[in-house]
Structure formats: structure tokens, C-alpha cells
View 1: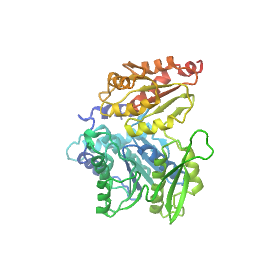
View 2 (view 1 turned 135 degrees about the vertical axis):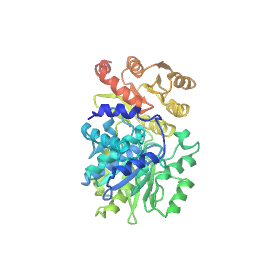
View 3 (view 1 turned 120 degrees about the vertical axis):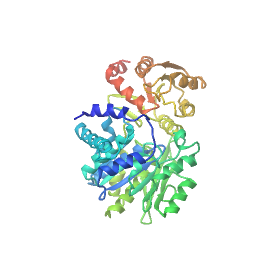
View 4 (view 1 turned 45 degrees about the vertical axis):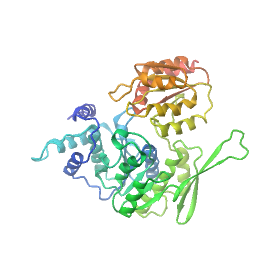
Length: 445
């Protein structure tokens, strides 16, 4: 019996292509596994940004409402186990090892049928589905990895589909326009499915799919949304953000001015709760009493999203890796008081690096650009060239630890260090933080 570590090493090399989209292989193995989801409300969440935080809010609400919930998300920051959660807790090693063994058996030794080669993500997705089926969940949340139509998570016809946002990302796989990308993400929409559209100005391809399949749906700016207004008597031009949702012809309101996750994702999640409540015919229209929802809004957070480490509050970790997520991050950073910002950045080469850095450059920071230890990782030189176009201080490093060390060396009293650009960067920084005596270094300045 392989350990989890051994299984992860195996699935990293089991398939020739790192990204190999399509449902034929994964569907074949899924059918061989004969998993039962008949009594589970399955929610598939697609979108350019906001999938993880939307899932996190729904997950926490389901737990508080007394429902057994599982979440499959990707990628992870520190441990693979983060991808598969049961009741808010990472799945244990032995549970994952057993699930991988069953997927392997179904792919390679199923009666007299052909061997099926699975990619890393396909193995991980099927592993999650095995774990969730064994757990007899009430609610199963599946975060799409890439796109939607051809993503491995789309092998299940979910009861509820959610599209959080549409932006330019993964263009080489999804298309070079938001309309083409929207069409790919709309591939999760199935007949008889209830749908939440979490962004305004719905694309024609999404509208066409909903109309063609006659889906029941909730859409931003029609059924829910956010209203912003200046706060009276504020000396700092502060803005209040009030979320709203129409329920039984009543407009419910929620203060989302100080959430730990993007307000639009909070409202998208609450709209989804309304559909989950209908699925289970609950007494509470949003699965929970309104006051509990309001408390959740203030308390739910997500690792890697504006994450401040409890023992290192001067370091902020954020996995923003495209233009839209960078814009949001800049807005939040501008609400924080600090003397100097030091940005440690590393990105994947298939991202729109220049557009992302253009957004982040509004922070007027000192930059520490790093290579990433993966074939998809871009070299620091390209990042540095983009930073140089803004005339800001920058240095390049061939590994993340060195970049972080230099940022710490230059760190001054009341400064802040922002680690941004990729899940891989966040993971490497977490490793470096554990290995280096950073806490005492920062506190001594």
C-alpha cells in the first residue's frame, strides 16, 4: 500500500501532459468506480476569480446549518490534503491514500478493459469524488480547475452551477476574449440545473445557454448585488458597501464593507445558499437565520487571500495572479496604513504578467522578483523588466527564499511585505518562513 507521498509522486508522472483537458478518460474511470451521488446536492463553481472564497463561504454556512459538506478545490498552498476538505477539515492521509488506490485500480485493472492514463488533476478529482461518496455528504462543492466545459469536475451533472466571474486568464486553453472564455465556463450549465451568475453584464454565450436549457437562475444586479456609497462624516473618503438579495419579494441587506473575502463572492455565495435551501426545502430561505449569515460575513476568511500570518502580521500572502485579482488586491492594500510596501513576486509564464504588474505598480513598492521552481514558472528577468517600466526599485533572484530574505533585510519599522503572484510562490514562501528565523528578525526592527 502506497503512502500519500508515494501516490503524489506517482500521479505527477503518470501522464505525459500536465494539462490535458477533455472528459473521455476521466468519465470512463468515474463510471467504473460506480459512485453514488443520488442523495447529495452537488454544486459546481466555475469562474476566473473568486471560486475558492465562494466555496469557503458556502462550506461554512452549510456546516453551521448542520449539513455534512465536502469541498474539492485547487491548487493547494502547503499540503495536497488542502484540496479535499470534509466538514472544513483537510482529509487525512490514509483516507486519500485509500481513495487513490481505488482510482488506480479502476484506471489500470478494471476487468478486461483498457488501461486509462489520467493526468494529475484527473487523479485528484476522482480521489475527491471517492472520498466524498464514502462520506455520504449532504452537500458537495466542486471548484473547477480550468475553464468548465472540459474540466474533470464537469463529469457530474451538478444540481447547482455557479459562475463567479469572467476575465482574461488561461487564454491558450480557453480563448483570447472574455466571450470565448465565458462560453467555456458556461459548459458547466446542465439541463434542469439551478444557476447563480455572480458577475454583472452577463455574456451572450451564458445568456444563450441559460435560455436554451430553460434554467432557473439568480443573476447579479437582477437578483442580488452590491451598492456602494461614501460614508457620511468620514475624513478619509471611506466607502460603505451594502450587499442585497431579493428573497420572497423582500430586499435583504448585508453590510460587506469589512469582509475578509471579496464582497461580490460573499453575495454570490449567499445567492447559492438560497438555491441549496430550496433543494432541501429548508425553513430558512438562506439555509441559516439572517443574523447568522451576517456574522459569517464578518468571520469567514481564506488562506492565501489577503492572509496575514498570526505570528507575522507584517507579511501579507495573496495568490492574485491576473489583472482583475490584482486590481482588487490593490484596492484592499490602499486601505492599510504602512510606510513602505515590499513586494515579493513570482508568476507563471502563461499569465498576463505585464498587465498584472501594471496594476500592482500603483502601490509604488520595492520589488523582489523571483524565479519559480516549476516548468511553468516564469524567470524573474521578465517580471523585473515589467517593474522597471514603472521606474520602481527591483531586484531579481533565482529562488523565493533569497527574494524573501532580501525583502526582510530591507524591511523597516511600519513597513509591510506583500507576497503575491502564484499559489506556488505562496507555498515556497510558507516553507521559507518556517525555515528562516523571520519572526525574530522582523520584531527586532
